[in-house]
Image (tube, rainbow, N blue to C red; front, side, top):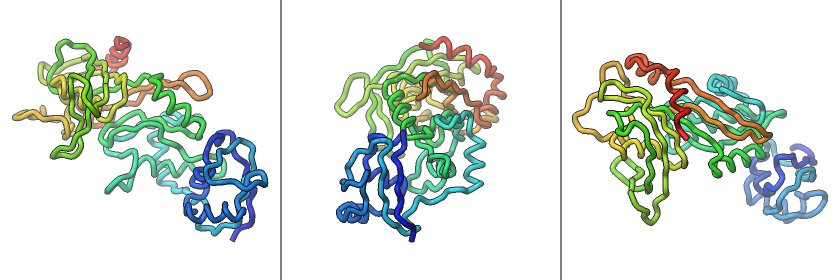
Length: 325
């Protein structure tokens, strides 16, 4: 058993509910147990009794009674996790971290998902650092840029930037055929519906109850005859499966997309792997402390192989991005 702790509310914890604070600092402490500690006055803020929904103010002192070691925040110091996270880190200044997520790695856990980015973030925890926080998502099979907040305050500001569309995200995709015209804007309504292969976004030209408006800008960079083309895509909105659904809507589904590629009697050119060819190439987002964070991620191995086989010049992609709004 440990003694009574007097813990100060940090600058980035202002506005956080007390029960949420305990969830982060003592994740093994059951909510029912916390309620009993609050009712009996064993947990106090600045010496006063409080309730679980009390909003915290930086500088306040939280009295934490003796708790079993099992209730304390676990230490995650797996060198394997840390090494894996470091290998995919493109930028990290202690406030914002940007990863190059590999294709096939889930962002969060779920049925059958033991290995995922959210679990790898446990390796960031320690006396001098906080656990990273996810502020947006990528599909499991999509590779590329993933932004992580290193503090709670940064998480709030970065999340707000995504919601306010203050970010500029660019994706690269290899698709079937060549869109005509070669550049344009896809604007429609998407609704999540059940299907044989699980939930899928269905497209509607006009507004429909339950559907969400989605907008994507795109331009063709290069093409391989009329069979394949390289698109630079810019999602104006951020909907589930938006780019995958939009590519399919215009008749040019993304290569390797098992859910949205539905073309009969079509075979992949030799040497190109049947894996998702969608990559979050770059992002520009306001830094929580001012200025901009601008980061680009190199192509994953299977897409680089396809680019090499097709003779695509990677440098042309960056120039094509400037053509988008």
